[in-house]
Length: 451
Image 1 (cartoon, rainbow, N blue to C red):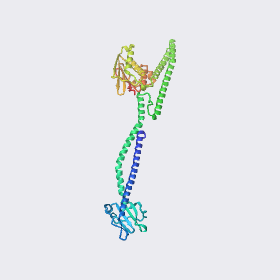
Image 2: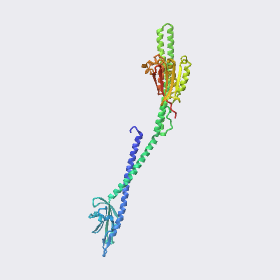
Image 3: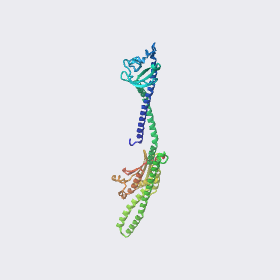
Image 4: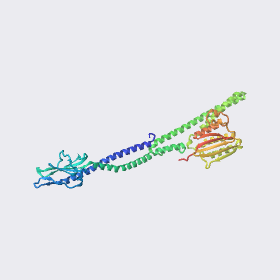
């Protein structure tokens, strides 16, 4: 979770949605309960006023309680619906109270007013009650009529539970809908990050040269910093290549002067000293030539592409004109369609030129060049029918180092330069003895279509 921004946003969003809907459900339940209670209180008040009709006056005009109206709710014992009427010492109760008397030890409300109460019921349950106070008669002889109508609060609680039971499925559906909307919002909101990642991948695959500025405003600082970093890297590589080239060129003049001195010594008869100087100068010139070749390797390889078939045909045409090349049977086999490689054309020309020249020098009669494609890789194989190389030297030939450059076998520095070029282009060079001959295979990435 710590590594995924999308997952963190989803978890936080889901928690916020659940917490909000939970609070909303509690609030709705409270509002529903209050509404139901108000409806119940209004009903109890109406029933209390109906019970006021049981007051009658006798022949002397004294008020008394008559028989109550018949109501099934109040006939069944402990039905949860109760009433009680008191007029002086006269008290009448609903049949449902059985032998229980609702407590009336509190002061009566003002005449014409009613109080909402919470009273204990005949079985210990809590009752929602309304006490109504009315005046019977006029003047100082008027009497206070107290009417209490109550119902079991369990009915209200059950109504609330049923309301929540009906509400929860809709809240769950709403939560899923909100989470889906949150996921869609996060996906759309974070899509520029995925776009940046795709563009970085395109940089790696050579489909783009820079990330660009056609991104949302929030992503522009990142893209500009990355492009500035790429510009600085390319500039530094260019400066380093120029410095390497300048250094190599700076060595060539003194080395040429040493060769001249060696010739003078040889002319004087100092053959041993002249030979020693020529050996050292030759080795140093090979190293300088290799560094010059490495300095020419292009830095913007990811956006370059070359056609190996065209370059191969051009190089073979040139080699046919040489004395040894004219005697060689050159054979080519190309994939259809011929793939394009992700490498600078000049770098590929230098690499294939070195491989073809080595194959020509060591071939007995024939050299075969094969260009194929395996998935996202281009393979260029150069095969000769010569003596090959010792098996123990196969792994050493393409490696960097002075030992290979000083081998003097004709394959040392050439293969080392090809190995550098292949590595710089994200490819590799491999050698295999075919008996007879040597197979040198250059593997490169396929050039992707540009975006």
